[in-house]
Length: 371
Image (tube, rainbow, N blue to C red; front, side, top):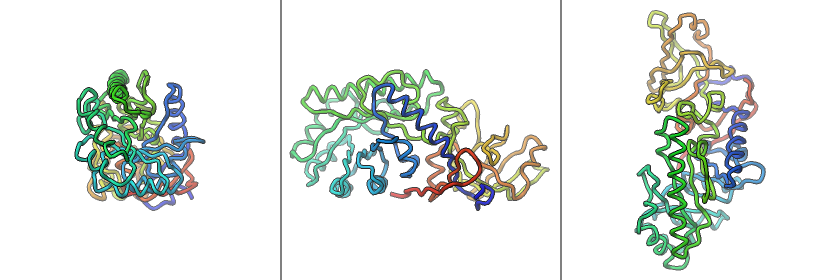
């Protein structure tokens, strides 16, 4: 099937670019002597995950227990649920372990640590470290760190496995050097916390860090055992803007149709609006702004100056600066939109229509949506 035959809007994934992105990250991380644990929340797809982990890989990070269950059913057993767990989810966590998952959960809270200790399950626990984002986690030098570990292991059933941190504030950087500085702070926080736990008598086989900017630009990962980037598998226009990749690496796009045209207002309307593209405007703070997405032709070649300027629920408005471009945007014609945030855009769709560097759809890969 040709892309032009698909009903729109539709989610398009270029397998060739996914392979290039994942091969590059795997080679980079392994060159530093650490393991790669792709964060599967971006793709939510077993097919993408298998490409990302490589021939013998099994380790993934997930953002929901639904994802954990899905990936376990697809043969992935080494999983980290990389969101602070709440006590009501401990039964589900334990059930996944019973099914064969080597599932690690995380916490930064004494009440939750106590609930983990009192639960009948044998939970494997990472303490989340705040390395500067100030979203969740305890400081690496906090007295709470070792006390949390003591609380988790108090009953003798659950066990501390190490520490985990995420430099989400790396997304606020605007240069490779700035991202590298955040990566170093991320590394130091995790390694420091891990060493403090070891000094207190706890085994810490896992020292886990990661975001796409820090994994891409980090200079050293000494003392770290694994890196957990996620969006790198697809890349997006925001990652292009902060220097994590070039536009030719963006593997995800939305296929849309032109549904209206007005030469006097110099606009065309697409059938891809806020629901199809998301309302993420992350490139607004960058040196270049692609609105709600960069417009490209069916083969993925960007149209200079064309972006989705505004969105309604099911409408995307494109301002056409060059009147000659109306010839490529006739009503019924189809284009592709490279999104600002691949994770958010993908969430609206049940499946990827897969191409392999061209315009022929070669497969369809399902996604695991919901919670």
